Structures are given as C-alpha cells and as structure tokens.
Image (cartoon, rainbow, N blue to C red; front, side, top):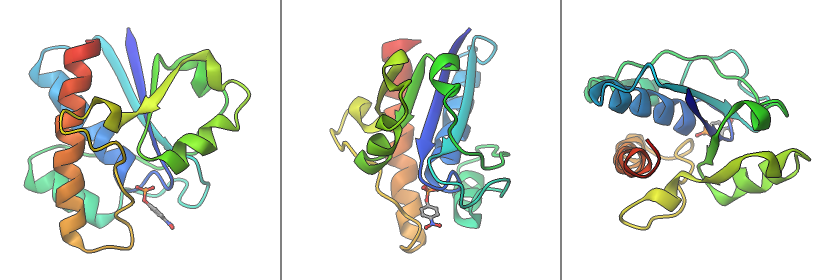
Length: 150
Ligand code: 4NP
C-alpha cells in the first residue's frame, strides 16, 4: 500500500481538494485499493471543519466527490506516509520544524507540475476564480505525480 499526505495551512481549501482529486484519479486508474490518501494542515485553526464551501463547490462542478474533516499534521505522519506533498514554501518551512522531517519523502506538489508552477498559492482571501485556478494546477500536478510514482 502506497500512501500520500497533502499538506496546506488550514486543511480546508487546497489540501482537501488535492486529496479528493487524487482519490478520483486513482479510481479512474483502478488503483484506489493500492493507495491511501489523506490531507492535513500545519495550523490548528480549522480542526474538525468541513472543507471551505468554495473548495466543495469547485469539486462538485468537476464531479469530484469530497468529504473530509480538517486535522493538523502530527509527527507520526512522517512515519506513516511514503510521500508528504506541501502546497507552498511556507507549508514546507512549517514541516521542516518536525524533527522527523527527513524520515520520508517531502516535496511540493508543484514539483510535479508539468507547467512548472512550483507553489499552489493560498486562495483563502481571494475570489472564487482562485479556486478554479488551483483546481487545474492541482489536477495536472496530481496526474504527473501518479505517472511518476504509481
Ligand atoms: P488552506 O487555505 O491552507 O488551503 O486550507 C487557508 C485556510 C484558512 C486560512 C488560510 C489559508 N486562514 O487564515 O484561516
């Protein structure tokens, strides 16, 4: 069983969207039973909350099922997941504070982006179009991640 954890700041916008998109791509590839996918935030601000309504609406528009609750990254995650994929450099800096950081493969999701856009920027304070933009960024990066790692 391979595993990946997506990480952003609040675990209500970007990383739950990435979790939902990758899960859908795994189903399309018939690989969903071979992979475990989860998401978490570096902050504790939104623990137990459902994803942001704009993330839910964007996933619905693209027919991607989404159902998750926010949680915070814990040190055990570095032992449990084969890949930890952060959304931006600030998330990555926060992950570096864990002394277990080097125990697994930690990267930016955008490192896999065929268009070379390294960071999936925080859409929280922007408009709805920001969510559509990150949807496509996350979608193509996740496809490339699976092409490389699955
Ligand atoms: P996320 O977006 O990290 O993609 O979940 C954010 C959600 C909440 C906040 C910032 C970013 N916040 O400031 O509460």
